[in-house]
Each structure stands twice: as C-alpha cells, then as structure tokens.
Length: 486
Image 1: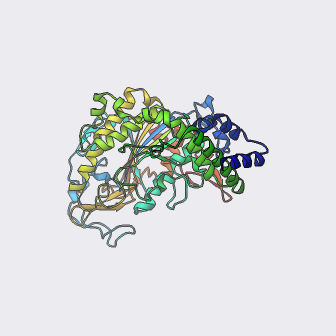
Image 2: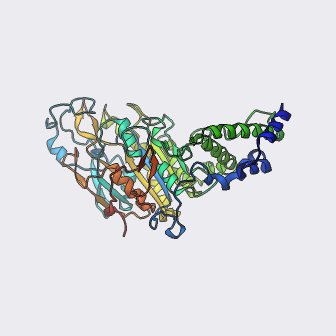
Image 3: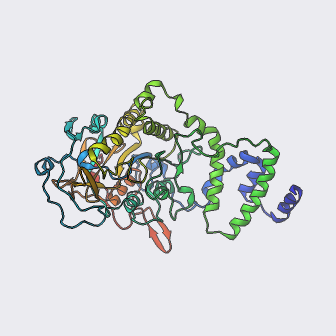
C-alpha cells in the first residue's frame, strides 16, 4: 500500500512547493518544524507587517509589545470594589429605581442598597478600594482606572462578546486575534495568543470570546489547561509502540497528498493552513512548552507570593504565574479568565453580594497583586500591559435580599504597565453608580487605546470581509489619552 502511495505522489507532484520540499527533506516532526519560515506565506500572508523602526508598531512607535488581560466573568460589582458611592449609604432602603424592569434585568429593581464592605483610600492617589481587594489596594498608584466604562447590553453573552470583539453578535474576531493578525508573533516556539480559562468551565459564549472570527483561523486563541497534567492536549504521542520514524514518514507523505488535494479544491478556506501551522507549532512546542509550563522551576518565594500554597488562590495564582512565564518567553497576548458561565462560582452575584463576592474576590486578589509586582521586578513593565476588566457592572438596587442585578450602565476597568499614566482615573458614574455620566468609555475606546499602545491606529487596522473593511472598533472609538503617558 505504501509503495502505491509513494508512486501516486511521484505521478501527481509535478512541481513541489517550498513547504513540500522541506517536508521531504526533514520528514516527520522535524519537517514540520522546518517549515517555520514559510508560515507567514500562508493564509495570513495578507496581514500587515510591524515596523522595527517603530519599535514593532504598525503606524507609530509602540509602547507595549505584550498584553495580559484578566477577565472577571459575570459582571464584577463596581460599587462593591473600586467605585465608592457614599450616597448609597444615605439612600439605603429607599425605592428610587425605575418603576419598570429594564431590558436585560433578571428581576424588577429593588431598593437602593449600600455596599456591605468598608471602603478606604489608598496610595498617594487616594484611590478608594473596598475591603474585598486588600492586596490590589496596595498597588493603586501603579494603575490607571477607567471609572465610566459602559456596555450596550445587560445580558452576559452579548456583553462578553462586546468587551472582547467590539460587537454584540458572534462571528467577529476578538482583541487577541486582531493583535495576532496585526502584529504577528514574537517567538516561533509558543502560540501568539494564549487563553487560560477557569478550570470550572468556559466563559459565556464558550470559545466565542477568543475566536478569530473571519480572520484566518491561525489567529484564534490557543487554550491551555493550566491545572491539567497535560496542559496542551495531545502534544506528545503516548502508548503507540508502532509509531516508528519510518511509519511517521509514510503517514506524513499520505497526509501531505490529502492536504494538497483538499487545499486545491478550497482555496478560500484558511482552516487547513491553520491546522498545518498548528502541527508545525506543536512540533516546536514539544521542545519549548514543557519548560514554559513547568511552574516548579519558580522559587518557593515566588510560588507563595502568587498564592500557590493556598487552596483559595492556588488556581488563579497558577494561571497568573503561567501568564507571566508565557509573555516572558514571547507569547504576545495572554487572557486569564476568572469564573465560568452560569449563576454560581463567578462574579454574577444575584443571590447575595455579602456572601458571593468575597470568595471570588479573594481567589484573584493576591495573585493579581503578585503578578503586577512580579512584572515590575523583572523589568517587564517596560513593554507589557496588564488589564483587569469584566463585561458590565451591577445595579445599585438590591435584587431579592442582598444581591445585585446586571447593569451595562457603568463599570470599572483598570490598566497598568507600559505607556500607562499610573495613579490616575478617567470618567465617573453618577452618585449611585448606575450610569456613566462623565468620560463614558465603551469597548471601542478601550480597544482603540490598547491598539494605540501597541503602535496601531485602530482606524487603519482593517480586514476586508464580504465587501466591508471590518475593524475591531467598527466605526467608533477614540484613544483615551487622559490615562496615557506623554
């Protein structure tokens, strides 16, 4: 059979491409790895190219090369974390909310509810932070706060899409995919865009928030299960004694033939090329990933700082530490998720703010502070951006007993690191924390600002799809220069 396959290859392959030639020269995984230099000539060949003279930026000098995004699934309550509202204490118990249930609310608004947590001012900036974040409170002078973030929805699914892709509906590329497409990779040995989901489950929309959408599929996020014995599934073959080097070579010859025929009949489909590139990357990761994912190489002091020795913080701390190791080794964008979709074990605190918020806040607080300090100590703040955000906020009105409902009217995001003016805040919500009233900032402005730090003009990063020049920021967005240096 193998003889006939080889004969068929000889007859059908009149002229080998450079990729195929390297396959023949290298064979097996070595051949896969040898095609690294040809990756950029594939489905993503039409992507823009960073300019070294602009520090890797496309359109102007870049301040940021790598990004870590911390996403709190469920809608973190601003008036119980970072947005101190003394008016809620004065109005506590009064029925001042809308008479009718707004769209997207899960129940009619109850009475005004004060925060059950004490707030204190911290740092030279005097930033108010509640008692649920004692560790982050110590670092507010390193952060820039967007105090008037807003969403166009009160529903988790569309809200999560909006904060990640700029659109309420599925099918659009996420921020990480746009960054991968626009700026490319920093290393050939690790994925450009890595996603570290909560082990309890994926966020709302499952894999949609880290999809490449209509961009070439190679730009989608690579999921890594940080808590598994095999964080990258199927990276190494196990239990197959018949998988000899010769068998590998014959199998790859057959696969190459089938791939070529498949690609020839589907020239507009980027999935095959993405699959080929994923195999090439997997070959290289067999050498690089074990070291990058091995947290035991970190000192005991570092592991303790991230909370790996405590059950409450061990999981999120492990993923924060892994995020630092990945960006340190060349991964460009890492997304760390806190909480799965659903009504429990996340930031969707409908039932009881006093009971549900403290546990989820405690699980992330120490690891986030450790990550920020670690980035600074290692000099990574010089070109790395750290982001904390969520899909929307929560109501100042009680839901049921002492829970809070969804609210796209106002929420908080903070940024820290390269190019960010530390210790400042932009915008504010009303006295209840219900609606943004000054410096309202949508995802479009947030994304435009991130791209600006990466050396990208958000109005010029586009991809033609179905006759439309699509952008991450759609037809909106402005850079929030108030929180940026210079």
